Length: 325
View 1 (spheres, helix red, strand yellow):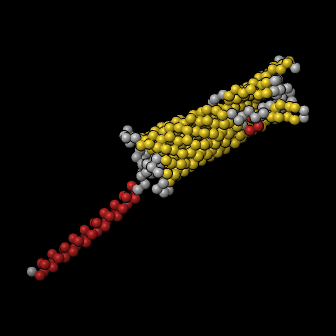
View 2 (cartoon, helix red, strand yellow):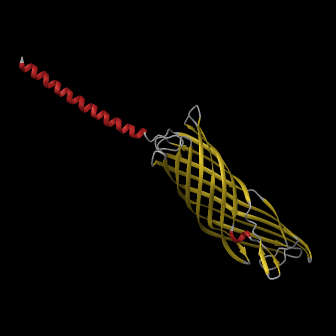
View 3 (cartoon, one colour):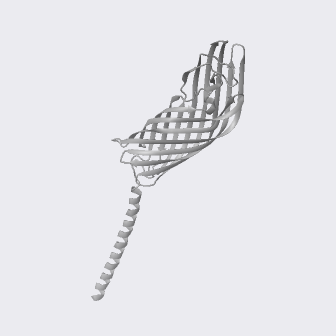
C-alpha cells in the first residue's frame, strides 16, 4: 500500500512540474506578443499597422529662382547700372500622391508635383541688354513662366524609435522636367524701335533619389515632421534664345547632357481625425525647399552659363488613409 501511495505522489510531482513549464512557456509567449502589440500607433505609420491605402493632395505656393537668369536686363543712370530681379515671383502649383502600406511598416508611394503658372510683369525702363544695347522704354513688359514637373516612385520602410516618434527611410527613382520661359517686349520712340526677346531653357532628366522622414507625435492627433531627400539625375539641358527688332533677328541655341544633384527638405505639421469606419483624415501644412544644382544652361553676356533651378515656399493639403478593401 505504501508503494502505491508513493507512486501516486510521484506522478503528482511530475504533473505539477509539467504544468509549471507550460505556464512559464505561455508567459514568455504572451510577453513576446505584447511587445509586438506595443508598436501600434494612431496617426504615425508603425511597423505593425493594418494594411491600407493613402491618397492625398497639396496646394503649393512657391517662389522660383534661376540665379543670374533672373536678371535679364538693367536700367542705367549716369555710370550706374541697376539690374532688375524678375525671378522673385510666387506661383501656384499642386501635388498629388498615393501609397499602399503592407501592414509591416513598408509602403509603396507615388507622387506628382506640378508648377506651371505664368506671371506678367511691367518693369520700368529703359532696359538694356547685357551688351549695352537699348531694349526700349519707358516700360518693358515681361512674362515669366517657371516649369517644374516631378514624378517620384519610391519604397519606404518605417521604424518606431519611441512611443511618440518614428523614422521612415525611402528610396526610388524620379523623373523631372524643369525650366524657365521668358518673354520680353518693349518699344521706344528715341530711337524708334521695337524689341522682342524670347528665352526657353529646359532640363529633362531622371535618376535615383533617397531620403528620410522623421515624425514626432504630440498627443493623439497632432504631429510634427521633418523630411529630407537627395537625388542625382542625368539628362539634357536645352536653350533657345531669340531677339527680334525692327531690322534684325538673332537666334541662339544650345544643348548639353548634364548630371545634376538635387537637395530638398520639408518642415511641417499635421492634424488627424479618426473616422467612424476605421479610416482617417489629416490636414498638414509647412515649408519646403528644392534646389537642382546647375540644371539650366543659357547665354548671359554672350557666354554660356549653367545655373541652379530652385523653389521654396508654402504647402498645405488634405490626406485620407483607410484599410484595404
